[in-house]
Amino acid sequence: MSESKISIHHGDLPAGLSFPKGVAIDTETLGLNPHRDRLCLVQLSSGDGSAHLVKFDGKTYEAPRLKALLADPAVLKIFHFARFDIAVLKQYLGVDTAPLYCTKIASKLARTYTDRHGLKDLVGELLGIELSKQQQSSDWGAQELSDSQKSYAASDVLHLHALKDKLDMMLEREGRLAFAKAAFGFLPTRAKLDLAGFGDDDIFAH
Image (cartoon, rainbow, N blue to C red; front, side, top):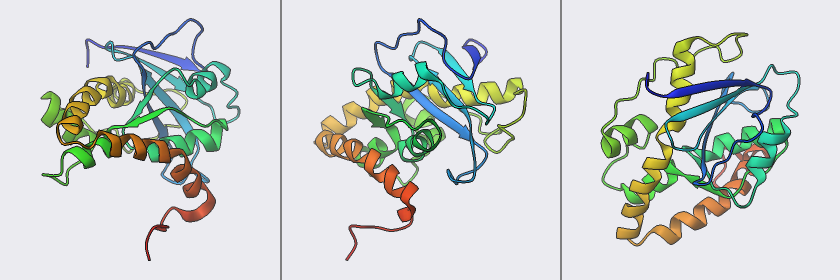
């Protein structure tokens, strides 16, 4: 992680950034309830070894450049467990994030030989990289983030482009790429159902 360039920005992305190969995105919140636990950080990477961390103070979420990127139909947004992240982004930024790719869903469709679909598991198996999850539970609302927090946050987006490439090959090999694309297309609706209180309900069940 020491070779990665990590930039922190307050309240929005700087002008002039471009993500021609799609943008990897993750979020950090104060908990797992979007109605209660505020959005603290949005991490982004173009897959070039650099990460941009946008920090929010909880008072304002204007972020016009970030919102424009999230809604840009020409830029693919790559997540791991997009369902949660796009719900949080909808709740606090009021934006519908699309188009989407979720490495967790892709993994569940392609890697049916295992039930281990966490980011750490994926990066370890497919890329041979060991991720530290030491800062997973920490105070992301702190006024100043520690170097360890910054490195952890960056690690969640730095490898998503490479994972997508690996998973796409596996999905195509197994004839499941169309299933993945359809699932990604449903994610914004699934996130809105979560925000509407249907998070624990399987609406497709009998």
